[in-house]
Length: 245
Ligand SMILES: *Cc1c(COP(=O)(O)O)cnc(C)c1O
Ligand SMILES: *[C@@H]1O[C@H](CO)[C@@H](O)[C@H](O)[C@H]1NC(C)=O
Image (cartoon, rainbow, N blue to C red; front, side, top):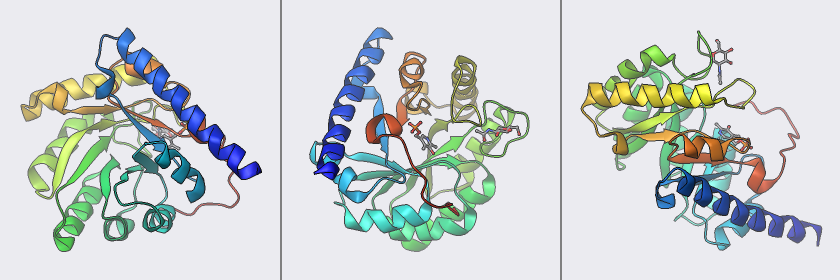
């Protein structure tokens, strides 16, 4: 009883998010179909994901390797999984082997992780993997995400040294507390201009993953093509135990 009330809440929340996404895209004169909504389901049960899936949504995001490895096999394989956020090098192989329908890794923030992913794709013989380079748009020295001045170099590395990866754009979280400012969004957009110039790539082929529950409308108005929305769809997260990855 209680569980199904929660599940229905997830579907109506998604419906309202999709409407707000469409309106934000229209306000900025863009086609709403060009803004992807990643339903970030970390910490949320498979039953809840299935409700949102049954409503017709296909794109889901997870942030912990162990968790996506447990959930993905229990869910239909036409889900388009995104891994969002920092990925540890020693988990790259596990992630790719365990999630054949992994569509996008949003969080390549150094050459080492790019190389590990590239090698894992090659060893598994799967299709080239799309990746976004994660940029720290808020600080000087990056914990998660490369410094904006290094984004061209890392994008070049992915494009030219990692034949099994497909460089697909840039991602940012914003501030360390998972909020963002217009300045973060402007910075990511500026990185895209530089990367596209350096790679002779059309900007419309270079995604901007920015915007989360608290700021996705503003991010869309500033050019986001991929918003990652967790708590506004699935409700606030309660962390039962310390996550280790
Ligand atoms: C959890 C998470 C999100 C979703 O955050 P909400 O504020 O709940 O929408 C987005 N991006 C990343 C990288 C995350 O880890
Ligand atoms: C970006 O770098 C700053 C400075 O090192 C750091 O404090 C901050 O946590 C990083 N931001 C993110 C989102 O990791």
